[in-house]
Length: 249
Image 1 (cartoon, helix red, strand yellow):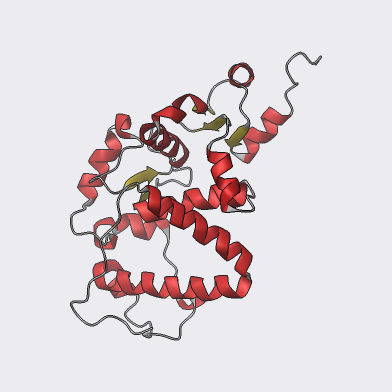
Image 2: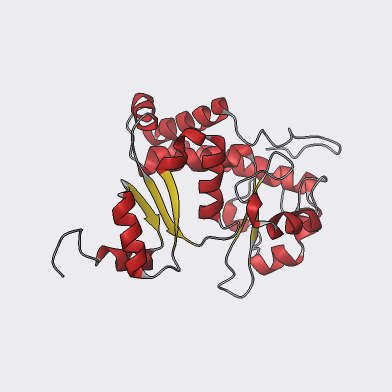
């Protein structure tokens, strides 16, 4: 791949949500699963090269970081390692959209009521809990979100065809997330985004606080009776050891 000439441009971030984009991502994931490892490796390298080229053009941080990287012929193992601490310390320089700033992102995160809403109508903003000593901040455009959803639907649910995908979307699953609440955490923000985009799913997608007592969590989950439950491994292990409703302890 040849790096773009000076002044070259890449298309801007796509819409925060587009049904056609989501369908295309689901098809891409499903097709790649059938095509095999060689196809996936070629596609991954091609997309990585485009991503690096875009970062070199738009982000001062990555321009400096990749200054010694050859224009082509490199592999992912040759990319310099970037830590979360480095990214957070150079947040403004790492951004690739000139309309964004660290101050703008932090103001958005300070308002918990905006969890699940888009920033500038096109970015999802997530933060980590900071268990390593420093919270991370992550921005995702509409295409990235479509890919995440496609991976979850097609691979997690192990759907075998686009027809099965349609059947799943029309099903009556009840999804429960037991996780961190009260902020822009990935799981919480994702559920709120789904509820805002698809109000008809609001009663079938719920978040339960992992900080609640085990007894209260069990009571709530037994009442809700989810068909799909997502949580952290430690919480899953704890809940799995709880007796079924009506069973003797």
